[in-house]
Length: 411
Ligand code: CTP
Image (cartoon, rainbow, N blue to C red; front, side):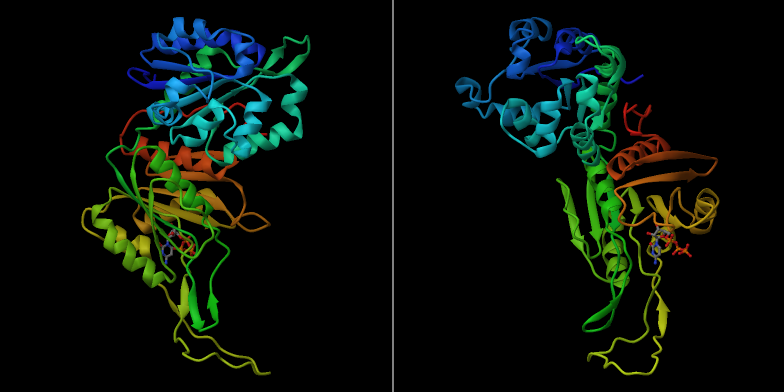
């Protein structure tokens, strides 16, 4: 059971009929030890009063972005920094769309844009609004960004329809909030070193050997580890991926560069995650001048690249080691043999080939460790990253975690 003791929860209420359950949620969070502050959208104020939220939280509820008194002290930034976790319950289709678009048009959307804290969204709307492709796409965007969704549930709705769209039970949202808030500190005090992306092995000044890695998984892990409170060093091969907030990025090109950068940083780290798709071979010789085309076949001699993960594993007192295994068949079995052959603490096996693999937005994985394993079903890479961070924390004994149920994740 996660504890909400001393956790600062920012409860954002938007204009769904389920807003009438927000005071009960605030009370439940408070009973479990959380300090709760509330923001109401304009729509929510038509359904419940800010005074009621003030009564149940003990702090005045904010409703407007342009509040002169609060904004004199940059209130929206202060609120964004204050929160250990932001809970939007109920979250309307409109609020979800605003978050997906990154709007800053009212206090809720502005605070969410300014905050680093984990974001938990509890949708509540008519079943057709929920199943509309626009809403589903907006939710998919949020999940890809690492936002957690809880619910919605199936049942009778205020409009008389029966279907999916009811806000989840208050107790379920409170449990999810506890996990999300707890997660914000899961790797506090840890320094995580992550490799990501492909490497590029030059043949001559215009050509190179590489692979299809997008870097998305490594960058998602860096974001998840940083959100979990770790200091994160990300050693990245050539990729267009955007550096997540609070992550120190070091760009490299070749496997040799990546090894050198990793070896420079590894003595300070407690966790090493080798997510990069390191080119296994590099051209044996680099040609200073561009090789000319000819009609005859050419031979390219290759030499093996250094195995970065194995080099770190050989160090005295290595950090907690996580490797990846991209496999075309028997993912679980091959992940397990890599666990032994590489001498690491955890291996994440991914299926590649047959149209699946590098560059996919969603993925599934077999995570194995000595004496155990877990399959993580198809989900967006930030969600997989979040679950991997939880598993790493569990295996390292950094806290007990029950994985968060994200209601419609399988959609
Ligand atoms: N790895 C590494 N340096 C290399 C090759 C791989 O650090 N030169 C790391 C990867 O980042 C990954 C793990 O080792 O975490 C396994 O990579 P993978 O390519 O699946 O395995 P290989 O050891 O290259 O074996 P094979 O390709 O034959 O399956």
